[in-house]
Amino acid sequence: MPQLAIGGMDAPSSTQASGAGSANAGTANTSMGLTPGTAPKRKVSSVVEMLEYVKSLGIDPIKEVDMVWIAEEAFNAPLPPGYTEHQDEQGRAYFHHESQRVSSWRHPMDDLFKDIVNYQRRAVAAGGFWQIEDEIIQKEDEIRSDLADWMELFAEDGEKFYYNRHDGQSRFDDPRMEVYHKLYARIKMVAKMKEKFPVLARAPRPEEPTDQEKDLMRKRMEDQARYLNSVLRVQSFIRVMIAKRRVRMARAQAVVQKGPQPLRGKLRLRMEKLGPGGGKELRLSQTTPHKRFRAAQKVQARARGMAARRKFKPLVQHRAFLSKEMTKVQCQARCWLARRRVVRKREEKLHVAASRIQRVWRGYKERQYVSCLRTEKDRFAHMLKSTITIQCGIRMKLARNERNWRQMLRFQSGIDIIKRQARTLVARREVRKLILLDAPVQGIFVRNEDPKTASVLPWSWQVQVAPWFEDPEKGYDAEPGENFVDLFTKEGIGNIENLAATKMQKVGRGMLGRKRAKALWAAGKGFVEQVMASVFSAVDDRKSAVLKMQARARGMLTRGKNLIFEKKNEHLKKSLIHIHRAQSYIRKYNAQEWLPDALFKD
Image (cartoon, rainbow, N blue to C red; front, side):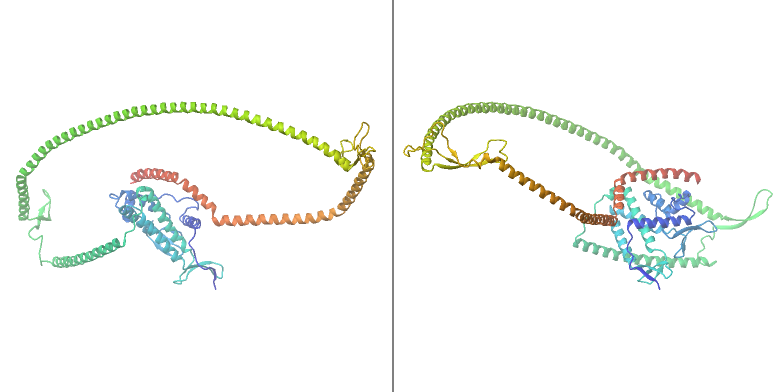
């Protein structure tokens, strides 16, 4: 039993179709004696054969010269996939399809090129290619719907074949190849036709008719169809009558000595000598009455011609006279029109001169107006500058007055501040004396100014005791040589050695602690490094795996988008103008080369 490989056949992409077409074209070339990959040789034929081929496509080579290029393309068109060209014993070419086992004397692409001929006629008649484009789109949809019934299957021996689910037909060759070859050839010929008729190719599509216009057109088509049907009936009836009459006449002429005899009395058989001394021979000649009758007919025709010329000679002369007089009238009319044209030209020149004078005068007035505006602008700018200068001088004077007034106010405030500070100083000395009387012992923080010991003891605590007289009423009075006594002398800067030793002990204990921490870190460093190395290696492996997965995903997306084909299409679109130009030059050169060869060979 065959195994199902593909459930349905989709339309191949342009890349697949072009590749399959080229492969089958290579097979056809091999069967014709050509190696794959080389272009088929140009066919050589006589002018008579070419004209016959042009007429076979329905082209009139005299009235429709612009369609001869279609015949040339058809004459050199490649065979569809599956077809091969052969010759019989008499040298006549025929075409054979291997898988269908069908042979034909006609080229399998002739019907397509007949449609192309009709396409050009329709495009010229309609003024554009929109009907042809719609028909090609419809054909492509029909091809897709027809190919949807085909399936690709495999037999038990692994050989591939194609099966139609609709009608049960099976075949070994791909049904898409021939269909799409003809479709792409049709599209290619329409594109070349657009190149040859660029005005029709750029013509816009007409607007869709309204419902009323459609109804009117439908009624008109129905009336035309009824009229044509009636005409056809009348023509068929007349043809039947004429055919019956011809049949009766043929039957009557077929009977000897019956019915009308058109040659009776006009011909006779008699014996005549061939020459002096020669023998006689039976000859068929005209009778004397018939000769006289024909001479009389010629005389009558001559007489009728002379009478007609005599009758129509005055009319001809009158017509010549009218033509002569009309020529004079036409000359006078042309002279009058020429003089009128000269007057019109003179008036146009006067109008142009007046326009130029007006333009020059308007320009002169506008320049005067602009110069006046510039003068007024400069005067206003000078006045504005002078006004700003005066305003600046006034503001400077006012600013100086304000500065002097503020200086005076600032000096007055400074004097007031000095007075208040002096009163404050006197009050502080009095208050300090009263405080010392009330509390003779004062504790203060003193900053260490010695740079050698400031790093160890930047501040020191001092308890100062004021000196007293024995008489309390005298109070405190520092005499020369009497100072305050510091009760914390041994705890301050004088005890700096003990403080330095304490700090050194603290630094030593810190160094020992750091050494113990380093020893513990050296013991656990190997284990930690091993764990971190395994973690980092796992992270690196995952990174490389992620990069590979991302590259593969990007590759799949890129292949799915078919970017190479799109880039190639963009490049071809950019070079399309140059390609068309080169193709037109090549076609012209080939036509010029082919024509003299064909003429000389004939």
